Structures are given as C-alpha cells and as structure tokens.
Length: 266
Image 1: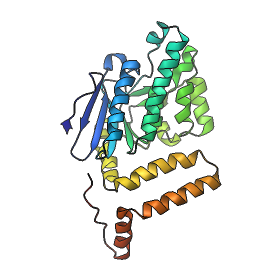
Image 2: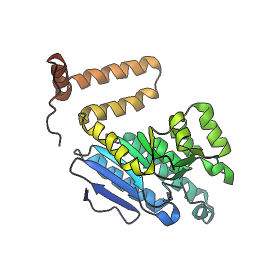
Image 3: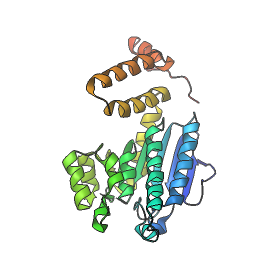
Image 4: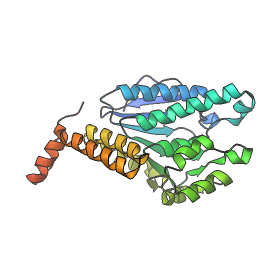
C-alpha cells in the first residue's frame, strides 16, 4: 500500500493502487477519542475521498488497544458551555453524515473496544468486520449522558428493543452478540481480521463502482420513505442503473453465459 499525505498525526491515511483508502485513527493514548481535532482530520480525509472518482472502498481502522472510546468526557467537563457542546456534536454529526453520503462503501475494522460515539462510528459505517476480542457499548448513560447521537445509526442497525437496552443500560456486548444483533457483518479471530477485511474489500472491488454507488445511495434514501415512495425511487434507480454501460455488459454476459468483462475503472 502506498501512503498518501497524512491528514495529521491523529489520523494516518493510506491509499493503494486499487483505490482502497485506509483511515487509521492514531491517538492510542486517548483510546482514539473523537475530539475536535480527530473529527476535523476525519472530515478532511472523507471529503478527499468524496472528491476522488478513482476511490473504491474506505477501510476505517485504529491503532492501540481500543478502536474508539467516543468523545473524551474529561475534555467535555473542562468546557462546560452549551456552545462548545453544540459545536462538538454538530461536528461529529457532519463526519457521520459524510460517511453516510460517501459514494463508496466504508468498512469498519474493529479490533478492540468501541464505546459511545465510537460505537456510533461502527454503526454508521456501511459494513463492519470485528475481531472476537472487540466489544461495544453506548456507555454515556453511566455518566449521566444518554447517547443521543449514537442512537441515530444504532437504531437503524439493531432491533429497537436491543438498541434501547444498550442505550439505557450502557452495558457492553461482545463481538458475537454484536453480530447476532446486526451491528457488525463478520467476526473472526484477531489474527484473521485483516484477511477477512480484505475478502470483503475484494468482493466490492469486483463490482462496478457506479452500481455500488447507486446502490448505497438508494438503500439509505428508500429506508426513510414510505413503501410507495420507496418503490418509486428504487424503480427509477434500477432503470437508470440499467442504462449504464456496466449493467448492459452484465446483461449481455448473462445472456451469453459468460463472466462480465468490466472496463478498467479509474
């Protein structure tokens, strides 16, 4: 993998020739807390991927023992001002929306603890692969702070009562439970984590970028609609998708009983 210029020391950014961008949270001493500086680094990196038409997949990883411990309550306690809290949570929400709106899939590579806004980060990613040593919690309630913003992607991934239990108790769940509840896609032994992420990456790279981008946008848009509007949007998306050269080649390949020969993508 060839390194790009890092956004800053808090976030390592690397990009390989296939268009896979790996963003690695790099503040292990603070368990990769989502302070303003870390959020700014993430925003800049995600904005860069959004502008890059050759980008295909983002892998969100982390260094140290934890994946991400969320916001740093020590910092928050030192700034007891409503304006500061509003700015911090708005900044975090912009990062989460950037992941949501990115035209390429974002895969969380979760090797350790993911709590509060760190759990939110996992839930917001399109896909997640976890080590069986990983653990998850929306733990703010232990400190008198209901994890309101983490609840947004959590309830869109996890069944309502199970999400509410996590939010109201703050209790940890292990990786296998997270898999059963739909918070992550795959769970493997720690030594197999990179290989399992790579399997998922390669499966996505084998598909046309345009179809992946259309599909990601459609899935999230239709989820917020009533069923009639959802079908209207889905039908229009499929019609536009079928007009794309890649879909036309796929249809010809199906009819001719051969593998599609996708054109080299940028």
